[in-house]
Length: 270
Image (tube, rainbow, N blue to C red; front, side):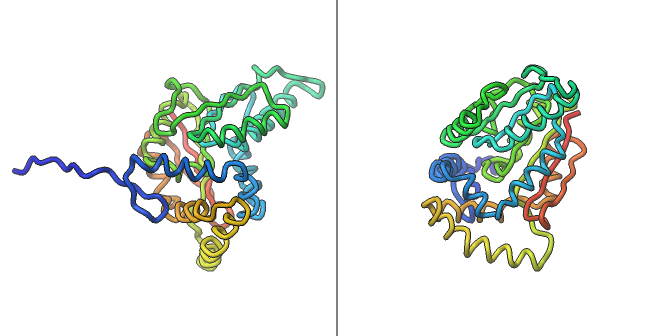
């Protein structure tokens, strides 16, 4: 019997390339260091503004309520966090009456956790520019080893970030760990297009246009080539739902957006 251990280093994908797993974090960080200052502008250009409609649908499905505590992972620019707080405040004001002005403590709060310090800086600056001070906490941390106690949050969101994680299953288990019993997991991510004609058009647009657009607008075509390739390597909807369930989360389901260009995933911690 051969008891020799396999000493081969763990590998993963970085776009279409195979790389040592330990190197992916720094490679992804380099991508977002490059595009952080123009990340939101590029999202608008890449999607024709449709990503804003997707995020609105995402918040609709979450249905934020007063008192909820949200952890937004890979949420450096604050887009999901700000939308969550706005919807939460509107719901609280409605419950308090037309002249009600509920305190921040009654609203809950949001913790934004991102591995990239540059993205967090962009988010903080946006918050300051918009007069957002209360109810936000900014933390530099890894989705695979979140720096938070067990059972801390009512809602966990990750929007367009899960495909950049080295070990997706480890991140899903961390989501389960930090959610309170009865807490909700929500993921918004580019996914597998389900309409054949749209898939062909989307592939042509993605590979021919987006890297060129990234080079012109963000000054880094390679970064957007990686983003395009990372979408193609991400698990399709049904597979991701199975992996969410395997992490211990229940009632995993998904809803396609724009024919599957993106998809929302929902599950619960029991």
